[in-house]
Image (cartoon, rainbow, N blue to C red; front, side):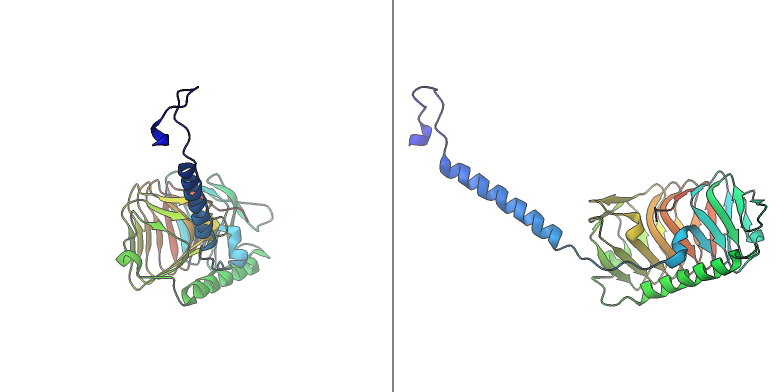
Length: 266
């Protein structure tokens, strides 16, 4: 009854200490729950890229572009010649070791250039292939055939994901985790993100710590936005206006069309 009476001087009802304690206890429980959630984040080691990490795009079969593509980082092809790099308007430099392009804020390398470029590229391609093999060989996935291969609209926690089929992203998808979090996606089929859809990183998640190991073809739809290191065994195609914050490391060809690619900081 006291709680319903007004204070004689202020006219205000006296504070319920039992209620205050209850709310403080609830706030403390919420805080502790959040701390426990962060501590429980699945942490797995990243896939080492070696010198392949120096490249925004590295391909064994060629890199072609149409439209006004913008690449932040080096690109390279090996074991093939610079003629497999088309649409970039390459200008071979006097050292004969690399070319420049108005579409690349970095250097362009090919196995046909002067030493030590061929050896450096051979090493980088070796690391690229080893990274694919290591990513594919990771066992004991935390998530098996998640979403039946459709991850659109989902919030993905860090960890190892494995699919025995292809993966589609028909709507926006979010990767939520700390700056130390790692995602490894093992995809036995193709990988497709629909036109205009985005991969959203939250909680401090970094594109450099996301790895897509894809056995089939990779397609980034028109104006889509993707993040991570794409380790492709088959072709990688970025359709008109698609953007990537990450790397394209392809054992076959890479096809571009007025795209923007930003290699994460080393």
